[in-house]
Image (cartoon, rainbow, N blue to C red; front, side, top):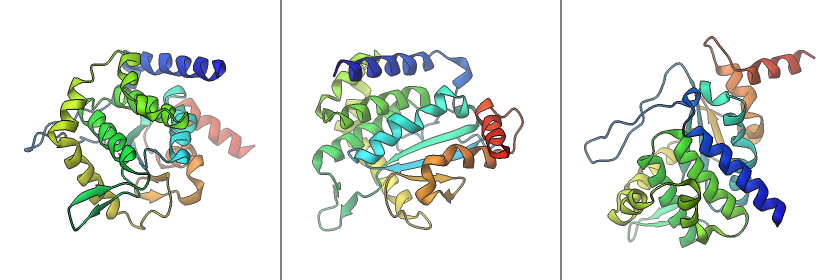
Length: 232
């Protein structure tokens, strides 16, 4: 238990350092007509989209143990990282209610994560919040999600306002539409897509696909290491 807390503290400290790191700057989201924010994608980067359920253990583990590495090895500098918390949820056509695979708690967490993405467009900030939520989910403590804002020194008011106002539900409905138009449809979660190419069962090797898809100059060392490893 003590070692788990130590790891959590260390990684949270690392993610907090991203807030003030100029090398990990990301895009901004101009507001659209309904007050929600939409992404302005950097076309020179590789699009990496993760479709997941917020209380899926495989998804939580992937986010905490695998995806976080893109910040550690500078792969984030060539990625447009998008997190889409919907996956196996669906909308009940009878009452238009959102139904989540792992129950109401997952719907709450998914809405909060959608709101965090919208409130803090900078990927460093919203990823830190989502990382914290997902770490708690692994520990079976997802009901303690409010503690993440205190741990990260972030004001939760805007996220709660987004949730209470119904904007979070609107965001999830947009994610539902996007997920529903995946081609081919997702078969399991986590489901990773690189430049519209689903990685299927090979999703844990996403770094290789990202590096292969990157056509710009100045590839991070992580890509050079992958190429070197492949040659050898």
